[in-house]
Amino acid sequence: MDLKTQITPLALQAIEDKIFPGCVVGIVTKNGERQILPFGKHAYDESSPSVKENTIYDMASVTKAIPTASLALQLIDEGKLKLNDKLIDYVPEFRNSDRENVLIKHLLTYSLDGYGLASLRKDSFQDLEKILLTQDFEKRPGTVFKYTNIPIALLRFVIERLHGETIDSLADKHFFKPLLMNRSTFYPEKFSKEEIAPTEINDWRGLVHGVVHDESTAIFKEQGKISGYAGLFSTAPDILNFLEMLLHKGTLDGRQYFSEKIISEMNTNQIPELNDFMGLGWELNQPRFMGEYCTPNTFGKTGFTGTLCVCDIEKGIAYVILSNRTFPSRPTDATGINKFRKTIGEIILKA
Image 1 (tube, rainbow, N blue to C red):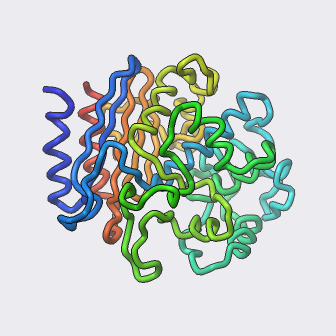
Image 2 (image 1 turned 180 degrees about the vertical axis):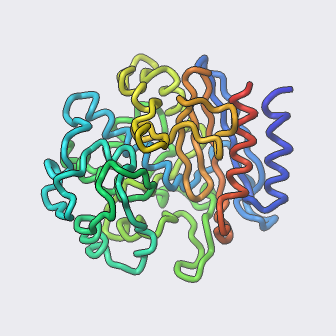
């Protein structure tokens, strides 16, 4: 039985169960074979556009890995940044009580006791930046794994200062253009809304469609800033281009994006002492959304809106699942979407 035959009934059932109105599942192997399977519509309304292979989705926190952490890893590859460098070496205005102890490694492994930025959606951009640069942590950096937006929000400062350019322009130059990711952007307004899946209808913003879903990132965007931890819009084919490059250990079509050493660090656990799993910039070995056939070296990243990408270099296969599970309103938890992700992951990684 081929992958399409196995995946199709599961996707259609998820639509019927209102897990999401539509999705795209894309698979790529190391030898370049691809399958891209679109299902459903942009919304539950019958008049809504049908999902296509290249429908654009708000990638949410996948942005943390593609491109933000990846840009930092390139700097490490080039010797311009080190894991044991202090954050204050690059961001001297960072001045919370742990300022001397926050290392670049902590940012890439989420080993900071952070706090939620989305809850600050009514704050101004200036307030957000002040909190980011001054808020104390409850626990010493490196002693806890806690997934928040804070580490990547701070990492953005480092990347932009070392390059003297913004995350969006760096992403275009280093990844999107050379990898032919032509529908990947931080500026979805350049595309028709007919090509973009909406993400939510809420009391605060009304219909969220063709603009970033993440609340604090939206505040950054209003000031012409890129947060680094959300804001990327992309498609299944584009993300597969990036994943195919990872399957080839950082090189594709004669161009090297990463060394094999840094690829190894992406899919090797960096925080075993914390009894958790994180590669540099990527989550590792997460059966809850990868399924039971993931290994200690299977790495990936999820996004709150219903997006996911996973790569397994040893198995020679990678995949992406894009959906807008937050439409028309965000579910109370991730149980439904993770059950779907897990089942799809088990089909693909077992193949």
